[in-house]
Structure formats: structure tokens, C-alpha cells
Length: 269
Image 1: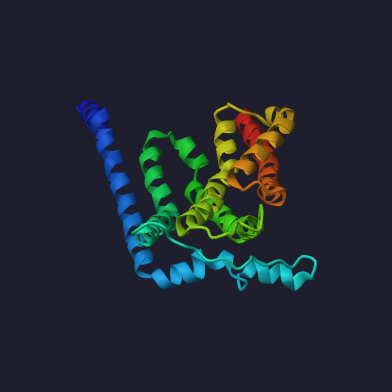
Image 2: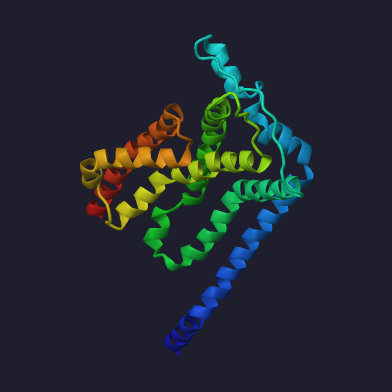
């Protein structure tokens, strides 16, 4: 009788495809609510968000400029003076809304990933759950490091290069507010995702799709791909491309070590 009860309980616990979709829907709703709540807070702090964060890389008081100028005169650089203009009715409002949403996603990323992980985790075996323990913390940390790297390192160099670039005396640099925010977004969020490389390599190594031998063999190909990726993320400036290319290559080398340890442990098991 007890065996039948166990079989019935197991059958009751099994979820259909529609049940999984319903469960996923609620995870997405909770993640979206978190983004909206943080977005509202960001939206209400308009002056601080724009003057201290968004417009930071275009001002001389930005920490990156102060740091390099504190090293020596040769390393000192500053962004040129330029004004941000708006060409369309409502541009400032919609940019403000866009910034609030993107910052809501960045700040809420740990919770978003946690909700995603709560949906995935029940489908894993107990051993797989033990292996992936702490994945939310690691992914959130790497994403935050990538965003901060893009904001404090890539953005100042890119803004200085792009704002200083000139094709003639008749061309005056007067970027729109929307284009400035779009570039700043491109320098930060994609960089945060790129910094997830070690985690991706770990899981691919765990399921046997890649190995340290393969990563070493195609290291030269990886360097080319990294440089192409850096060219896509950053503007056509060699210095800025190397600023993103070098840490990504370091992450690639770290990923080789992670893959080696993962494969070794998997083979021993």
C-alpha cells in the first residue's frame, strides 16, 4: 500500500509542459516586478542618476581621469567639453525611462538570475546541484565586475576618443542625449555578459563539450575572436579595443584552468 502511495505522490509531483510554462511565467513576473521596482526608484532619483552616474564619464571629476592624472602628466587625459542635445520631442523623457529600465536590470541581475536558477534547479540531479552550488553568487559577481569595468575603464577612454575625433573644422561634436546613453549602455552591459565566460566554460566542460586541450589548441583563433568582439563592443579605437581584449583574454586563460580542473574531477568521478 505504501508503495502505491509513493508512486501516486511521484505522479502528482510530475509537471506537464503547460505546468512548466506556468511556473516559468511566475518566475519571469517576479523578476520583472523587481526590475520595475528598482526602475521606479532610479526614475525618481533623476538628478543624482544623470549628474553623478550617466554624465560622469564626460566630466573631469570622474575617478578614472583623476586616477590617471594622479600617476603622471603623460598618462593624464580628460574628455573634451561637449554639450548633449535633444532633437525630438520627448527624447529626454524616453531616455530617462530607458536608463531606469537598464539600471533596474543591472541592479536586479542577482535576483533575476536567482529566479532563473530556481526554475532550472529542480530539473538537475542531486550531484549536479552540489556542483553548481554558489552559481548565482559567482555569476552576479562576474556580471557586476564586467559592468564596473566597462563603466570605469572602457567608457572614459571611449568617450574621450569619440568626442575628440574630428574630420574637419566644419564638423562640431554635439551628440544627442540618446546616442550618448546608447554608447554608455553598449560599454557596460555587454561587457558584464562577456565576463561570464568562466562560468560558461565550466558548464561546457562539465558536460564534455569542450576541454582544456581544445581551448589550448584554438587559443590563436580565440585571440582573433576576442579582438573582433572587442571591436564590436568598443568604438574603432585600438587602445579601447585592447582595454576590453586584454581582460577577456585573461578570462580565457583562467577558463582553461577551470576547464582543466573540471575535466580532471569529472574523469576521476
